[in-house]
Image (cartoon, rainbow, N blue to C red; front, side, top):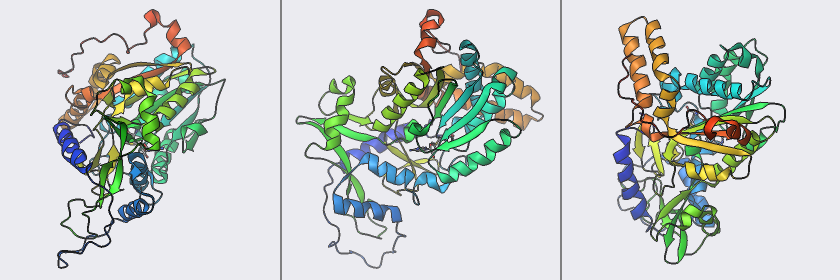
Length: 447
Ligand SMILES: C[S@@+](CC[C@H](N)C(=O)[O-])C[C@H]1O[C@@H](n2cnc3c(N)ncnc32)[C@H](O)[C@@H]1O
């Protein structure tokens, strides 16, 4: 199951309503004096990261959700992505590049068209944020290497990845693809480490990266914005299997303004227009990272890229959720052992580009993007070269999954980014396929 699937959606809504709202009533209270009501119950294996987080809260008070997410996703020993391969049927979720090679191939075709429109610069680099298993980059490179002009121009690959375990997996895969080529491969822990350039065209991709960026949640009250924070659950009894909160953590709404609640809700004019009682999830790191991407692409020879993720052209208030074994679970169930994610506010990413020399394109649905770039003819080719019926059916189903309007095809959005020069020079001020919405027929995939 992908992290946004047909079956996940209704469940997601109930998770948000049932879990987040009631737990906001929780207030900090020491658990050390609460007696064990039934000492005969089996002891649970302690989640070490949960204990670290509870101890932090005990000494400093409730922590922002963003800090909780950083603990869970990126803690050097207990962080989710430090554990290695969490993708695929055996992992916790499946992503589009892992479902079908067509995804990466069509991203590469878009890159090729942008490079040609930019007068085929002879120095090109590709930057990817959060490459996972390296599958998407591998498919992009395999495709681009079929075109001698751009193939000879690719000088370097820059991967922003903070998981050592995933870096190893990416390195193993991509070093094979780059064998015999004069292409540098390098890793960075953040976008700010990517070197500036004036003589190289930048191609950029972030697939399911921004949904993993920390968010902070705020509620608009009569007294102004208040922050939802992670607190210790006063009802928690360590090591017992009967408690409602398995990790001893819950959400609480701050009674007074916090440093973040005074700053972040003021970062978009859209937030101030919301009515009392509204919630917003604000991803300040996403804003900063996207802004830096805009600055990189906006300078020198320019560049272009795509951000693909679930979300929409608006803010969300209750999309924060956890995935484990292809199911949505409580965000506090098993810190560090479940993926944490939130919908991407593409409008906020667009706002971050103001004054950078770059502009956003779209977003459009994943299905629109892939069909416009030739998913169907590519699928026909793959089916022609498949030898047995079983394989043909797998290929067909995988492609259908990418464009399913009720699943990944409709829920995942693709936002382009380009240097302003390219946009000004584009016919009608539009860059294909980010053009005025057209109805795409995506139901029938039989070639
Ligand atoms: C959901 S996975 C997506 C992987 C891949 N793009 C795909 O679609 O299959 C998120 C990726 O972002 C990386 N990541 C998460 N937070 C990060 C951070 N703060 N800095 C760098 N990489 C991060 C993870 O290690 C992982 O490679």
